[in-house]
Length: 215
Length: 238
Image (cartoon, rainbow over all chains, first blue to last red):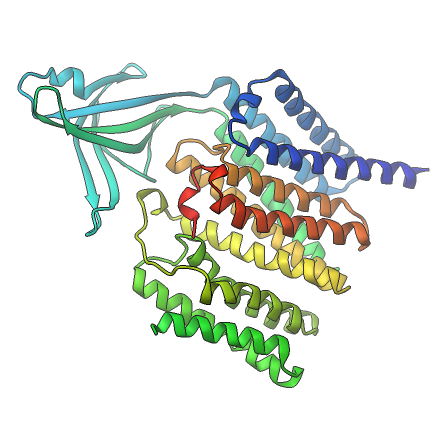
């Protein structure tokens, strides 16, 4: 009886994972972002969370540690996604460096982020000999000093993270050249939860690999 | 003919030799893909000035030597010779590398200049080789070797997914972009999760390993090259 119940649960688990895989492929299609706003998507996310939590609890009682770790990792990742969806905040920070004598430079170069004034000191674009961009670097002045931000080297401060995204430039309507640095400022409390889940998934997959190699 | 082209053709010949020649000779000819592949990677690395992983051509350069390494490791660990399956895989990759792909050189855009670049791509390349071997070995009824291959491959696939996510968080400020390639990679990973849920080495495991390989092939080729799936991985084309 227990054997039969186990195989039914196993079959249901396999079916659920394959349905999730099919859903992931559907979400890869163009304009699928609208689907993520639907209530049915949120219900599916809750179903995934409850499903993995049930597997984790059942595996703990059955002393199946690897399965429990794997399911707990999946729960953590799903919860982290939920925290991100509910509480992450993001905004573009576009600062302009202009040579125009008519421009209000303070207005162009300064913004207030999280109660602090952030000022653009300089922006630098490195290029390869063929003109292709190599790196964008922005030097920002915070109340306590200068900080450099470039692509792949974000700056974290008081829960906010500053990312270098791209740049823009050209000649303004007044005929003077200008350059714009485009940064993103983001606050996401879901990140540590998701990364903790990733660590659990990685540890569980290492244990699964060892088990399969020894078999 | 450039040194790279010569090495690529030599690699294809070694793989064909491993597949078609008598076992006694084929073993050594196929294993020559290890030094040949390594030389190919190093030649390309020296030419472009960065680890060759920028596009599909450069990422595929790693596959033949990795497959050869798997042959050697399986021979040492399990005392079985997976010569024909590995040579077939090597040939399937070496022929497009030598005759189809355009080896035009390019520079790394700012987003790819990251410490996560090499481990993320390499983890996926190792995973893909191991999963493909696992599938072929399942079909050849060698469940032990197939399980080991898929088990280790799954670890690398998880590592690749996690490293990509952490990298995305560093470069774009979000650990998940809902990018088509990410979604396909997740779907592939979920199929292999289902593989682990199957008890024993029956037909269902073989079917799932075939489905997983199909998903990998679509992720690597169709999703990368089709205009239908524009996303943050667009630079990973030919």
